[in-house]
Image (cartoon, rainbow, N blue to C red):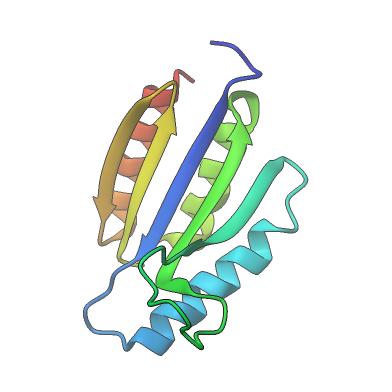
Length: 125
């Protein structure tokens, strides 16, 4: 595994019991926390590319979605952080590396732990 290879994570909060504002709040909180990590190359919201022309939308971000990019050497640290912060939350996570993609869903701490383990195996840690 090349430590210079970038790994891209897309994380979506998808609890059907929560209102869009609550999902958005969870995503914004996680973005703020991730931006404090020195290991990450980039953290941002996922922008909606289908906004109508002339739309007055502020930011144009999709509700509850964010992306993070990290080099492969630090991917384990990011996954550990996510495991600590997101246990018990209903999420979907996509991991992309070398034109390959792994998608996982978790609705409990146990499922998140299994998802983190699968992501670590996928990126080769």
